[in-house]
Image 1 (spheres, helix red, strand yellow):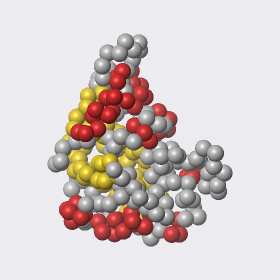
Image 2: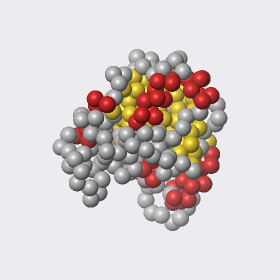
Image 3: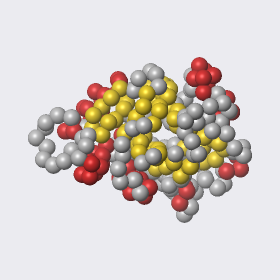
Length: 259
């Protein structure tokens, strides 16, 4: 299985509009971060996680011209605003896309993109998406076995997941102790959000994310959803040997994804 880090930034992206800090002015492409999203590719199937505002550019850069399933972590704009560009995949497939999200989020998504779910008189092709609820138990999307975990992100829930020995969790503050016990020792590679080294009321910060990696016994921990406080090179020394920062365009090859 191959994991594509499509976007590695927090909600404002990097550079941040109007900011002239060292990271925002950096010429290092690994400090240029679009909003967080990944894609999983295995046996000719592709699962997209979230539709970031830059989704069209992200999939073009990754060479992804078809997707077979979509999973939403939550409904914040930095994870959903690229929804309209899903119609680009329909131009070729002519098949509705199966999208999975937490059940309480379906009304929100339908309200934001009403023209895609009901006849509003809109002329032109709209995203063709069939919504499904993420269950509280393992399930399958496009051949990918998903073990979900419900997380708390401020006053809203988000969804993380494990696919065999790979896990992806973003936009959370605390991780359920029961799930730590269940997943411990089962994850080789984990991509998790860690916004910066300071404090934050609704996001896991880098020291907290590193602690989660340790609690889970992760072999390789990759930190994503990074703010402009983090310089890819300068702050690398602050991480243990098994951890690293993600960057846009990063790929991770896993020998196997089944447990």
